[in-house]
Image (tube, rainbow, N blue to C red; front, side, top):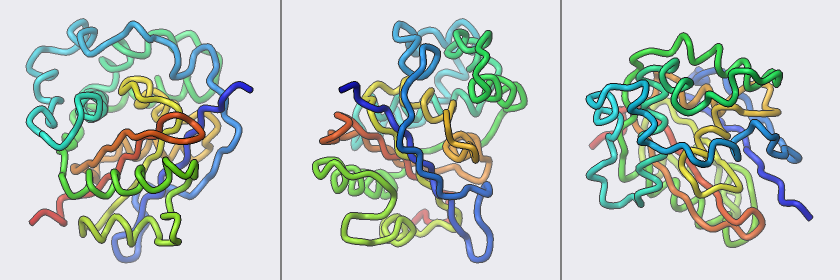
Length: 235
């Protein structure tokens, strides 16, 4: 049976009284990759950024370069997210060219959204947020579970804040991929997620810290957890 490649919505939470980016908790249980979805463009790599970004921008986006606690692929997840935040149009030209003639509403809206994205704050890797993401990936992956709460019932907010006490926090989870660009494309397209919560988290100007963990998942082979925050938890 063909595996489902599923994204779960990111919950963005809560400073004290507000919800960051107006993200709700939507669960999408039957999203299959289309011909134009994140499985496409497999030959595109970070080198293709040179077509539309300056070398200075490519280097700026590589904020995780010296983060020894991250794998190379996890570092690339952050770099791709940062490139989208630096210049959305250039990102679309370099990595989403196959979507520009799509008639899928999610793919068309992503291209439109990226046209207005320019010079958002860079996402800086944070070791504590990476530990929060790793802890969740290692919890749900071997058990084949999905969702934002821990398998022992601990809420997403309590889990993340036990590692990093930022004011605004959010989480994305991608299932099915261990390739950085496919992960970022999947989350940005947000196919079937009406609130576009994953996309909003990646492109939200409130966030400047990120943790990433790509781990084994019993049902979907791979999962990638992204935890976002502002800088208020820095110590």
